Image 1 (cartoon, one colour):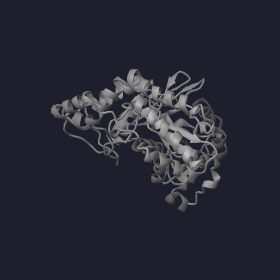
Image 2 (cartoon, rainbow, N blue to C red):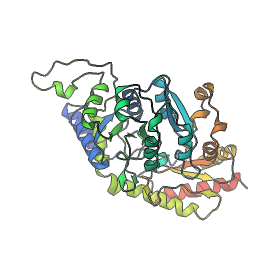
Image 3 (cartoon, rainbow, N blue to C red):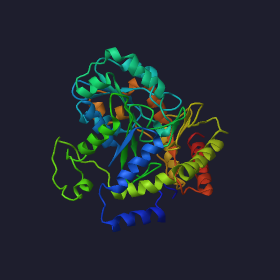
Image 4 (cartoon, rainbow, N blue to C red):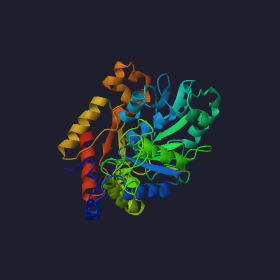
Length: 402
């Protein structure tokens, strides 16, 4: 069986994790701090906080900004539930909008139609690792500055809608010569087990706010906020005579451990010159194979201003419906090839349907979803395995559409 996306766990990672275990320091400590600094250097943003998940990072930033009851957050209907769930957790209302028919990302015209006086945040999602149109989104929040009604100190300081990028898929992607993480106010990465760069579980908040914000001061605050509101972490308390601490806010518990950071440090060191090169080879092989057949709509993973990070290969089949797509997937699995679908649109989920959301309002999202199949992309996928995937897809499409 060819799996969908197993993590790359090799001797180098095992050795680093073993070193952490033997060091006697396994929670947040020197390796986490080093990982944060290296992410900041890599992405070109102002400061970075590592956490136990991207979901935690999104929610922390919404709460820091004061998003709550009566507020609205604009996000694409085509995303994973985490993007919307954090809005619900804060008591605000997710405002789903439709996506582009070509690249799955949030539609600019749809964002603009949804902005009103209750809008506090726009959450673009870099689907499959391709950055959204950040210059245009950043211009939109300035354009509608006069409609923004701040309720908190941080909202007053920013003076406009915050752009909180769900960059879970896009670590290492490029937009107009800049890395994901440095493209807008704040970006949140995921280092989950299936991501290009994994820490088993984990995430990072890449801070990049304009003046008058001091991103280092904000980092220091978020360190406290993500550790129960405690003003000293375990590493700081090990300093001689520094045991005493205070709780200055009712914070949360979502810090990253040094065990996770050790994996991330290895992954980051070889990311550009090894991981991304291998993933590009897989993407290029798929593109070459499926470009020959008009039944396939190939994903966009680069253009004149963007270079994605090859996270997902979302192949679409032209002229089919959801039932046929599901039948094709069943056939592919019969060839011992695992595939997936990214994503079942959030407004179609039971919880959100019960809130009154209706997929009929997002026709492009549904059309993309109903024809999409995500193919395996991971480091240990060999040329022979790639060919097996290609043949399984083509044969399965032939059988269902014959």
